[in-house]
Image 1 (spheres, rainbow, N blue to C red):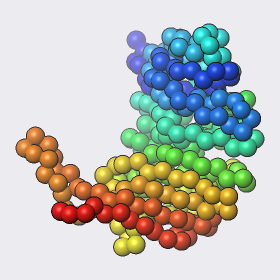
Image 2: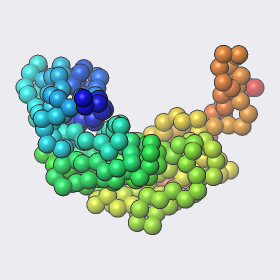
Image 3: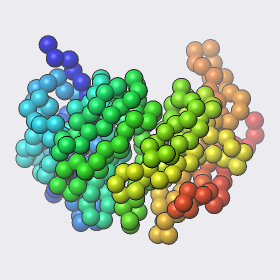
Image 4: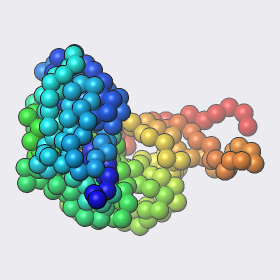
Length: 289
């Protein structure tokens, strides 16, 4: 008997925006690229080796019947799916959590693989997960859904993305509390993690998926750890990048006898130039005690 393995699913929609209730792991959110096409937000798909049930928008994930990297697509409802793509994970699961679309309609998705092992995206594109749990994942698809390249192998998760006019990819990687020492993003690009909290790293990749530089997001005092909260990023027209989130403060809040003490947090906003140099940092702290 084949076990159930979560399979990630990416769907591109045409026509009216809709929701994917079962075909792609929950309600889907749509974003629109410059050409006006609807690009469905990614998610996870639970498969058992056979055809998946059609979702509300009429997508049959077809886990067992489709080639690696492809999924069956059928029309239905008020929204027509143009194509769908899945990935066969190396271990017990995988997840797409964020996406971005460039001016040419190429689609970039991020998330994680549960390793160790090699994931197959189809079109000859694979990625190796080196660690036993979360491995950060970044994949580029062209406008027709053909995988172009995939990057993985770094312990943790890759989340929010932004694409500049030159096709460079800016990503926020989350490093878990148990990651330590030198963290390698490939191409000789590394950061050092020494705390026991969750760190967020801003990474710039070129259009071929090669890491250019990485910077751990810190405040003016060099503090980097958070309680696992998600950071976000955006680019301006000059190529500067802005990162916002929250870092863990010292001390802890006692939530009562039935809950673990929780470290307080403070908001952080950082501006970086295109080379990764921080231009300024702003924090917001709570009033009172």
